[in-house]
Length: 116
Image (cartoon, rainbow, N blue to C red; front, side, top):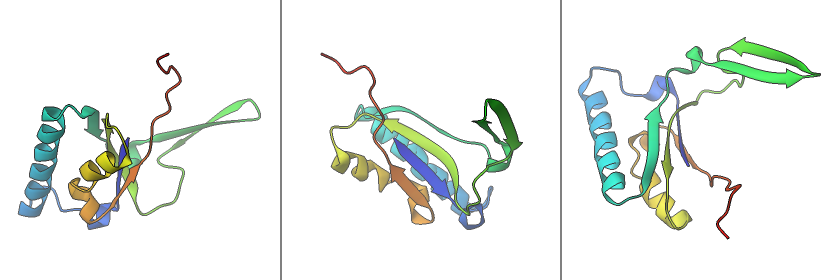
């Protein structure tokens, strides 16, 4: 999974030429990964302020509005890809436009039902 983090203060502003260029980069990467059969899914996420955080402590459910962690970078989207190894994942991750001003975390997904 490619997890896309960025600091909203460093992102291109919606409606500007820079924002359009960034989105064009995402559209091209989407097309490439689909054409190469690597992309399983991917989406952007709404702002961190729209989230609800849940945790269970001592048998009680606690919910909080907004993100729980205090960070400058927020999880803004993801790609779930099917590639043979880390090098292949890195080759796609480096093409994510937000990598130029944010962070992309590459993390294997657990497989609880491996094929025999």
